[in-house]
Amino acid sequence: MADDNELTLKDPAAAKKKKLIMIVALAVVLLGGGGAGAWFMLAGGDKPAVEAAEAKPADNAPQPSLYVGMPRPFVFNVAGGQRDRLVQIKIQLMVRGAADEALAKQNIPLIEGTLLRVFSAATAEQLMTFEGKEKLRQDSLEECRRVLKDLVSSPVIEQVLFTGFVMQ
Image (tube, rainbow, N blue to C red; front, top):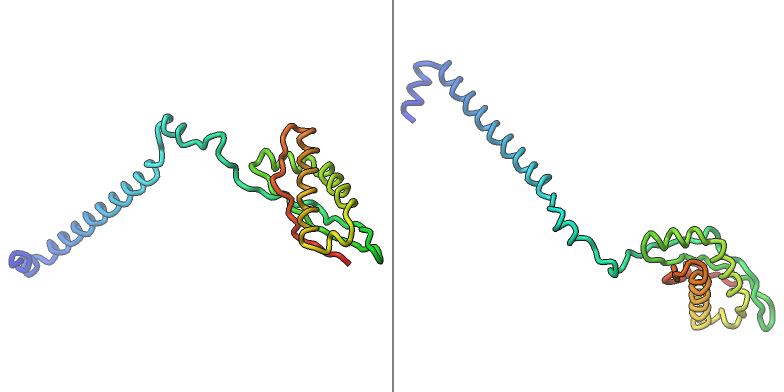
């Protein structure tokens, strides 16, 4: 340290030069470390083809749940003991994977017709109870799956969900 003080006292230009060299060296080390770290992080994700093939999910692994909304709510009349009632049901279809989603969207008119046929068989007394609504939902699912299986050899729909249910 004594030599540094003597150098500063004797030649201030040399001291400034030494400081500048230290700053430049420190900047090069920091930039080099940052660049190397970025390279390892970005290039480290590459796996050999063998490992990448092993990382693919198995064909029997469950697909993600996707939801297909029906374009409009179902509005229909049901017969009641004292009077007929008007019912409105909003529906979402739960499917597994993009292939089933595409099939469901492609066959929405068929699904709508099937659901209306099932709904028209319901009575107001049935729809006033939770058990009746659940039976209607289950019957809707079974009938839609049967019709789609006949058409595309796959049940496509996993669940029929009532997202809105109003009866007046």
